[in-house]
Image (cartoon, rainbow, N blue to C red; front, side, top):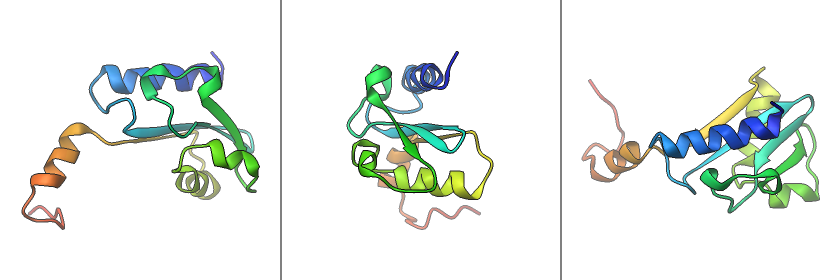
Length: 109
């Protein structure tokens, strides 16, 4: 299975397992000095070959505009770690807790 197929597989798994909804997250994978990342506006559940863009880890280009708005965060993670993939998802339960929590600092004791 190649990197794009892996992104498609795990994008669907995130939604199917209830960890996030179609638009609530971003997913990417390192491919040498490149990043394969979900395009902006693409649904995690409906990812296909056309909804993934390849960008450089170390330099910006015009292609960056079609990538997820979270590309800068993913890029910094790849620049500063040896991570092979990044999944950034907004779990529905965490979102709900952040909205109803009286302690907005989210510190637990």
